[in-house]
Length: 368
Ligand SMILES: [Zn+2]
Image (cartoon, rainbow, N blue to C red; front, side):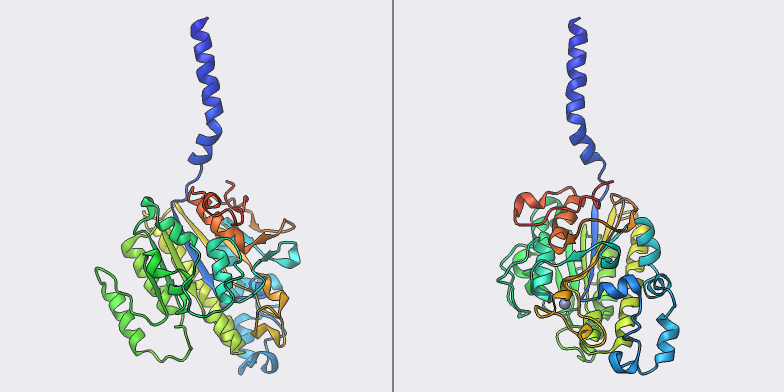
């Protein structure tokens, strides 16, 4: 009898403990690769090339027929797959995509500013800070989720950020955060130096500075890839900028090509992760933007407080803890402010406990 009672007590205790044990055991993510591309509109992501911009007048397209061959298809489904084939095959097939406003899935920034620094601050801290009201190179007073993770012993020396925009060392407060933040045309002082990074540094030094404040996307992409290959960071951040640059320039041809290249980069990063035993099966890819933009024929070039529609963004998740629900439709809205806590939750860390102002994790992303 006594023995039976003890056994019953032990069983009850195990049952009580089970949910917590299960919740921890079921998360497989050990590494996060977080890629952003500045200001790529949800319109192109979900509909592909925009008919209103594929012309001389609104999109300054010089070879309309040629660009149509590249990116125009009659159906929206075909168009978006032509523009972003990896996104609409692998991520749509195995992950989740948020932000198709026309399918009842809204994703938006909450900072009210709809431009870059406020957007990056929101995505990295989990809340829109009204003090962040310009793109000026000021060190972020807020601690980002990357800095917060890096302060934990498990992530010390295992966080790195690479960006096209030279303002990232300020946004991420690199001197205080203590992890590598390589941006713009700055040489990356990697130890030990590899021939690839040495060549990239040399090319950066020689490249024409044709875009003020940022490099072309191939520099941060290839530097990040080499860092991933050699250092195997747990949290790798890559920020691309050409989608925003070409839109501001009104050049729809190069804007579409930049978006297509982003997709190619996502594919190469994901494939590299699947080939690498340090990453395979334990890596979640997170993709997002810092703000949306206006519409064809004119305001697509721009974004900001005066364009309320530029608050709409999109985001995507692909990894072992995220159910393959594909393109989300008819669901409650998600916000930019939820991304920091979602990334942390994927890694089994509770960011909301440290930053109560932060949005909560997106439950469907962490829900497998
Ligand atoms: Zn931006």
